[in-house]
Amino acid sequence: MPRITKRNAGVCINFVQYFPHKFWVSSWQKNESYPEGFRYKIVSALDDYMPVIEFLVVLESVNGFKWDVHRFVTSLKRSQENVEMWLDILEKQHGVVFQEHDFSSFKSAEGFEQASHSVGWTEWSKKEQ
Image 1 (cartoon, one colour):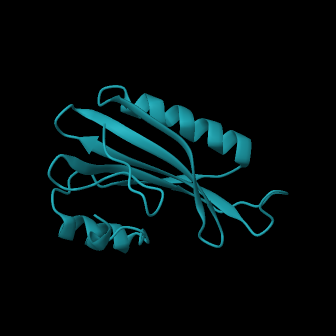
Image 2: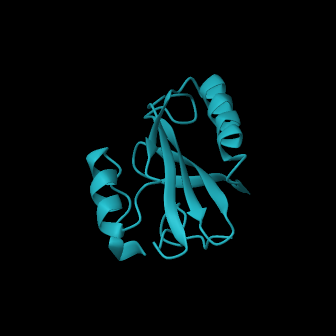
C-alpha cells in the first residue's frame, strides 16, 4: 500500500513505485459548517508493483486547511467504478461538480509538476517527496 505523506493530505508519488493517476477537484460550495466555502479533492496514485490504486478523499476549506475524509485502495480494474460512486455521493450531498485531471501518463516528477501546475494544482512539489 502506498505510504501516506505526513505534511499535507496526500498520497505518496515517488516515480519509482508510486505514480500519479487521476485527480478530481470539485467546485466551491458553502454551507452552515463552512460559510466561507469548501471543496472536495480526490487524489489517486498507482502502485505499479501491486498494481492497485490508492484514493484519498480530501475536504478543503477556503483557508487551505485539508482533512482526510476517506482513504481506500482498489484494483486498477475496479478503480473507475469505485471513484464514480464517491463522485456521485459528494455531488448529490453537497451540490458540487467535479473536474477530472488525468495524470496517469506522467512517469517523471518534472512532467507531472508542470502539468499539475498548469491546471491549478499547486500542492505538490518535488520538495515534498
